Image 1: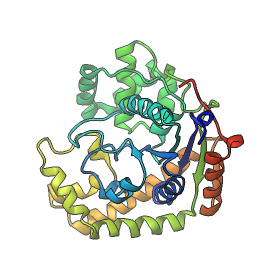
Image 2: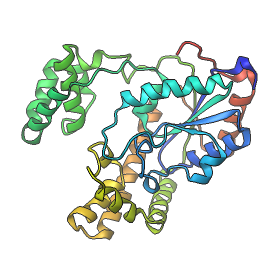
Image 3: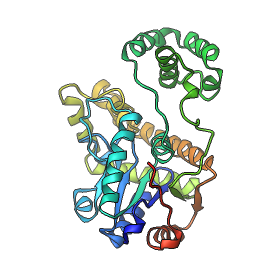
Image 4: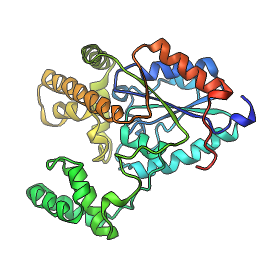
Length: 316
């Protein structure tokens, strides 16, 4: 890859279990070492959370250069701002080697923060702790307060979404600015130096793939992985506990909920996650969608190897 092609950024996005990771690995292996993978996933950042996050295996990581994996311990909190900060340095290192970046992942907010260089507000821990305490019994009051302080932000979330309500109010109170005033907003899709290719499957097929994959994970030892994580000093952090699959299996590990019930709940939660991810990405008019894996593969290869088709972003 020529020096002029440094700065190339292509993304493969889509819902969980759509086959993104396998395709991205195959493409990077084919084009190695000139293409390096950056995983855009809120849960593969945690060490030890391997099976249920579909983290690339040790063999895959020896074959292809992966980034943004195993950044923190599972008892640590992690934020999109921290992810964005680390990714910028990683991206520049890849470009310094005159290689191209292929992003792969399904965490929509992390993707937007990285692709569109969002301005992310600071953390205000003391404010957040007070809000979290109130949210346990007075979440409706907090939502009404947010509706007054930042009606735009309130209109973008469900009145039952405790995490988002608390975060928005934390920023409103801590910064003195409306939460919605940071960055271009999720409803704005500016032109940036990333071409996004979306891989899409029929929902019936996706549902079947999700169940098959989760039961394969169980056979591979996912429950033992959850037990081990829960037994670590400090256990799992608040953010790590939100991982679909882990959250449900913790019911068995910590509260003796029947295992099959937890498995069924995890499969259902994964299917709902897939629908949310698909809805999130389909709102982005910049994504080029493909129903056929081979067609998506051909398009990404073109973007990564054809100098006339590449996108350069030297400013970020």
